[in-house]
Length: 228
Image (cartoon, rainbow, N blue to C red; front, side):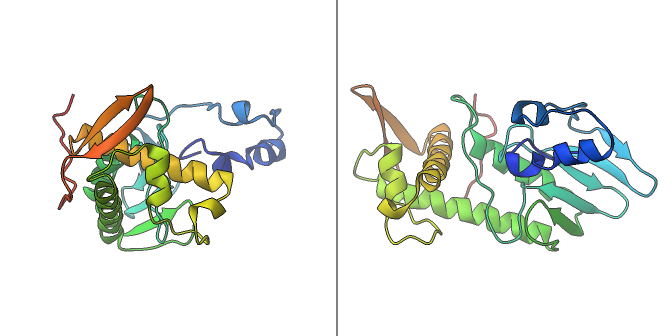
């Protein structure tokens, strides 16, 4: 069972299938092709455990968490991690992954979770506290962006280069291409969210897209659930 399709979560599928005597291709396309697609609210039971499937898009479009209803633990995949923040990047042109991520955090926050089994790092407790920390992180990132584009129209690349990133580099020029790709993706996700909540304007000039803040600071991330 996979919580989502990213390569760091499917890489050993070939070995697993091979060890149970199944014929299977090593290609990523086939590795990520599910035998069964689980949907929100589905139930899965084993001899000792009973799981409810919770659809939690944000980190990836089809991400799921598994909530054990008796022992109240959560198999969280990459949705909630104990020390690092899940990477949130657009999965298609019209997606709003940060908005999806906030909604997914709210869904998990409604459950009585005693212990979290994440896809990276160690098992942890304090799920609801960690959810608030993740919300606060993204609020800080949104406010950092608003400050950067308060009086100057900038594009996503320019904004990403001015943000603070928790990487071992002293300047944007030291970022490797993959780090820049991740940083720009994260920046675009925040810009999409801020635009959808009408905190910034999107300005198109000479076939280029720039952004300008409509306010300098937001105090909370109460998402507009009535947006179209």
